[in-house]
Length: 468
Image 1 (tube, rainbow, N blue to C red):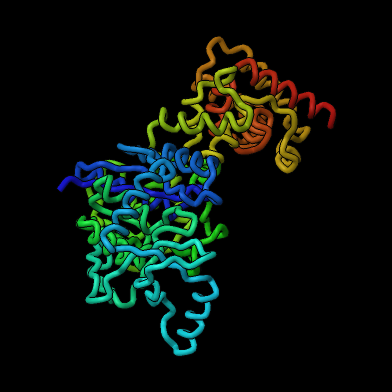
Image 2 (spheres, rainbow, N blue to C red):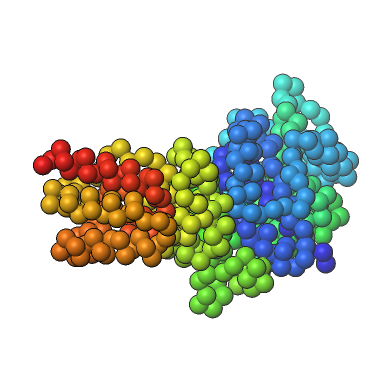
């Protein structure tokens, strides 16, 4: 069998965590088995579907690196095909026009509830032959009432549905537009989808879709319904738990592979391993190893994982993603200042996110126009003024701006003024970075560069002279 999976989001919002995990598992399964991954946009809900949402989905897929082999296909461009299949079902007496009014259906449901019967359509229009004046009919699929439909699910195992409990679902609305359960069947059939991996909120639709496929003489695909994702408190995942657009994670400084790694571990595991490269995910992923129970979203675990990726990712890769964050802050590292790769490599061990890394590094590329009030009060005191003046002179006199020589200049200055290294380094940090947190003092001086270091020491000296 040639494996063909698909991701079929509705463009009624952004690509969220649940959708991204579904896309990832479908992508991993196709990649593992040498198959194809198809992207399909289910945009038949014209009132809620927007171009902005389509763009958000495509942007999220691109950022995550989930490249698709075919598509994107848009359902709104396939309306003629859906009408063709609907007509085929009508011609074969596998579908029928339903003229029931809203009032009639409401009365039927009320009667069923009164009798404590599960509300469902009773097929009363199956044998109507004449239209009803004033009512535009819907079209219903004539479901088989006998026997049961077995969903052979790769995650949940065999799930049986009594066909008598499956009512004749609507496959075309009164305005002629096809419904979800019809379009998804036709798309999966025409696109030769072999495996449907999706959330378990679709499980109840599956036997209905299987019965339509059988009516069309097509073998249903293999299904895998993923358990839902819950918040850490066990409730349904919401924005307060982190159920935001995947692009929000980009804005917050997460690496795409860290998010993919985290999503892969939401319901799937391989022994005790926590960190997986993309290649390892493809090699090791097994849909049958997905947990049947719901997975809990843990933002702290994701943050920890992101930190691990920042520490070990190749520097050029970090630069690629960090550059966007510099740009968001109006910083162009190429316009002056130290080499961005040197800065990223220096700061990576101190950052949990790229936002932290970039914000902590902004001083390398921006003028220092003010000091952190608490740090200036603690470290920029009049008694360090002579040492700062001395250090400035020693640094200006250095023939080469090399890390070892810079370090020795700070050490010699501290010794000359009877200061411990920390008492010397902290005022210099505040002078150069605007605060008392920076990389090692020699690295900081080296990366800030000769011109800016002397200029910023002059500013700090002036600042202290005004205090004296």
